[in-house]
Image 1: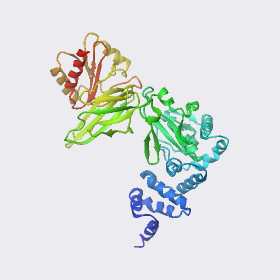
Image 2: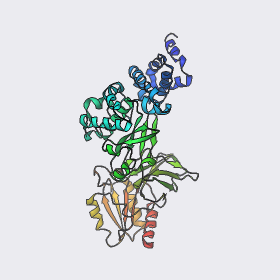
Image 3: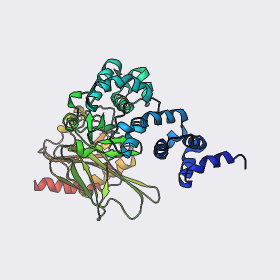
Image 4: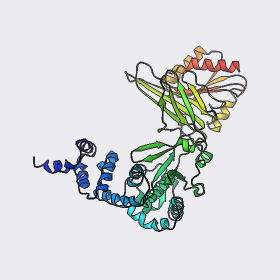
Length: 456
């Protein structure tokens, strides 16, 4: 009994439910976390400390550092009297020491000492952000080679004085938090124009969030800059306990996409959907999918070209993956059908490498044709080619032995694996068909596409 007595006493000031959660997530660090909390004397700090512990990620609890936690709490709560923000804003965007997924570090005391003079000389948070960014221009070297490197803590970025695009945004947001200005990272996973990820920070000022772009400080507060330069697919921001979709603030009137059709069968045990920005193959993981009363899926997204991916796994473990492309234009609403996806002009090949495109151009000059790409040795490829030849014998079928779908933007990325890719090209270069996946009803879809060509 004596072994467990200190732990039981430590938990006396915390509810059983919170205690159980901390033990489950923090493991051997649980006693230290509770002792740290119980040692706090200020009631306000105790209140925020408990809320902070509850939203900390499991990794943060397992690596809990008592000294860093307390010092961060003291320095952050010191701004409460001079701040006009809600408790929620304080907790998520100032008290929390993690900006993104970088390792936590005790950066606030040091960065406050460095940048406090700049903040005092500034009239508002926007001027403070510009001043810190100017310091970073002189002190931190841009390092694009770190794009895919493991994340570094804010203190590591500061001491090594190098940063990728996203690391610089993380550092600037951390510096703003150290000065008592709620800040957060904003992220575009893939631009519909640039085909690249892009990050910046948002700071809270005068009752709302404003963007600050490290690559163009003159555009501070301009929400249209991201769409104009990169093309907005989706935008989201990070907080201590999740993400917030911000597409509506940055896209040029984001459009609603409705997807209907037989997405799930009675035998499907698991089901998933995703959208991919065309030209990058970057899944838009935080796209906010919703389901209507009929079972259809709808979501909001910016103008651009995309792939939609549906996947299902039955009770036996067999997977069916379906991929097709679609374009979101200037119309208010886009309706897609899984049974008969309608694609826009030239969509099928507009992002293929020039060499592949030039090869295909010579094939459809006289009549519509169908091109099958993939690994000729794979079972799905052999099955699909036989089915097309049997069901659509009057249309010329060309074969290309390729295990991926290469794009103009960075040829090293592609749709890898065994899933065949079917491309349909019309003779007048006005209609195209593109779809990829396993066990899809390909011949019926191709016939519908050919009927549409004849009607046009």
